[in-house]
Length: 402
Length: 140
Image (cartoon, one colour):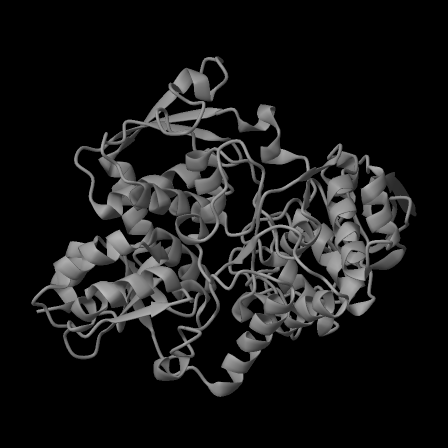
């Protein structure tokens, strides 16, 4: 990989120890992936949650902080493993919280924006079309490539810090035009779609496409960015998908033909039976849940408002908890607008800065979790500690409220 | 009798050990217990085996972008393989090994892209050595 003189200096340590360490990561990755150069990024998004990073991840962030590291570009962070304000009331043990707070402090020293969310593109990190970014968090990578028209690879833990500390990323994969062309085409053909169906379509797409970039047509005209957020998150949870061409939505993609770069491409229909098979796969039990989880990825203020309406006049039945996960910003809006009060009067709890798939569900005593998130169902099921149920919001509410 | 093959060095280093061979996609994220080095992934064909000190072979990586962090934790607890050999480049292995060097001063060689006969010859329990130049020797 070619380095310019400024990058050579960083590698030699002339720009400080932290940049030198970061450059060592970038050059190893660049050489391994046959990148020709390092290119500037507009923003970073990194991981700093204890459940995946462990003790070693704390020591890694502290190592960069001690070496004088400061992020070179605006950088945001994925959710923490605990609600950073209200963790005690969720039964999180003190020693577990302390581990997360060490990560928070180290991330703060690096100059990161304390915006602990997986939907940074909705609240605190706003690149524009055509810009290159370096984001960890697979669902935000799909959103950036497919809806904003950014270029980003799915950035692995450790590389995320290296990119943000230098403001650079190796040029390979989804940064190259050739790799962004659609190689497989799908058309949604399953009639009227529920909230669950969007997720199931995404999951089917991610599972079926493999390493090929898909193009997806046939979605309803009025589909919202929130619905596409969940569709993309499900795709990224089911397979290596980092981009979905959406004709009429993805910048530069007006038609299926645009997506494939003019090359002929066969289109497969996604039918009701395909969605049924996703539901069958993600439902591990029919037992009553002890937790209902909404908000993987984080719900927007608009989605919180819709949920509040559905919960109006309803009460959770005994023995079932309901946690609604959102960003700190949307939590604040829900507080100010009264939406939080409406949601919580049902017995549910609104929680922010954390998310279900990275919180210690088993340790908190949950055995069966019900959700409308294909991403949550897939991740938790693969860990094998907690059984999952996967159903549309209306069906969940019919079962756990009265 | 021994056989020698040439591959592509991703993280340079000399290492040797017993081969542990998976024929399926592999991940350290929720797939290897950092406190023991034991493979826990229910989808793995080497579940129950231990990666510690082995020359770990798998065709390609899979799953979460946190695999490099899980690898680093495994390094912190002293349970990493002696070396990792893949067919196609596993970014998590490259990053995980680089992080282990930066944070714990421990470099684990990584290599890929060997000729197909190497992958066919490699079996659990065979003695394997890997050099900085990407030369891999399999002995009986």
